[in-house]
Length: 431
Length: 175
Image (cartoon, rainbow over all chains, first blue to last red):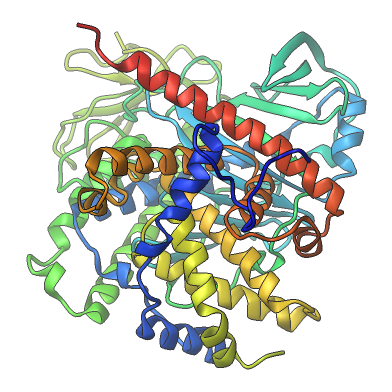
């Protein structure tokens, strides 16, 4: 190593490069680091030693910002529950034997998952996948830990110290959520070569395959034969209006792979961290029916104070939940004792979880092309009002429309409802 | 396994400095991070024999501190909030202090973009002053591989920082 270093191992000297100056800038602030608070020492000894609940001083923060973040997190929980995050990668067979072989030999991988809804903002997650069946996704607002062996997923929201544990035992379809596991079962057939491309300094070769209407691209380093980037879009033909009012079309990209990384095995646990309040729920998404869509609409209407919201997608869900929670929060929320705030947060989580299953089941039905197409939704109607069409679609193989009214009645019509503004749940604006 | 209280009292200062230095502030999340380091260390201690507790604590503190930096960088605007109050009060004047803050922030952002293990090894060397041999022992690599990784990581960090500076320059409106 030819780096010029001074006695203490740091870079020195003026005029050195940006990294050296950055290191110096960080170290020069050492003198400004406050002393370790004695109260923190005591809390840490209690927590690490006796396993007692400990609270960081950041826990007391409670505002609408937190509520919104929490609500979006709740929406994401539902999405994740449906397998929309990494779970969808568990459904394929990739046709590039060399790449597959390399991946199959890996026991763990760390990477970045970037998720971007159409027209929406990117969200990035640090992902760690470890055999057998562990996936940890860390985002800015929440962490999701999935164990396919245990059929469980735990969502942790640090801002509210809430843990939601979902039991997937009843749902066979969500078993595969680990990229490593996915590659275990792939064969070397049915892939299409995409050519070569340079990605992050790697010369790569791309492969594409399609299954259940989902296309997946894998770009592998030509030297190491390990994936450099894995990309996929959820669904076919465009989903939603980009504002989350429909069911979003989401682009997911896995990158920055670190194969067989050093990781902390103590993180692979479904044990709720100390200091967190847990809400447990079982979710069954098996065999969704049209009636689940009716229940989903009713749930949205109730959450939105008796009026159908402008959409029924994840974005709308976040907004509606935030609104609902704001109404239920006492005006003096921020001045309540920590214990009472925690209790309220727990109640809100429990309520969110009650709504999660009907919404997820409705989405599962609408998201499956075998049930129907041309989904349209018109918000603004008073929930429970007879004869007002809220959602309509064409059942697979039929020319007629199934129309769901605001009171939950389902009727069959030759023509799609007209008048009012409807959004397409799976594409551009409805006509 | 050492007594928890003794470990927190004897190594707490080092863990605290490591996290605060990396994150650039001391707040509730940093306090949570501090606690998590010792919780994780105790769990590792229960699972296996630890020969070098100090090294392991330093490594876990670095990793968890970097995790927090990464989360903040990815959470829009969080990094911009860092240390603003302290900048104004610096003795050498706000200009110098501001430049220093930008450099520190630039390095933190770059560290958030390189592979976690690379960031960890780089920080153990240049912020924690561990030798290649010491780093190799705690991360399970040969000293030679540690050296290679640090060298490559430094190059990547430089590239990321230079790119960011270039972007900032191009964003400055022309008269």
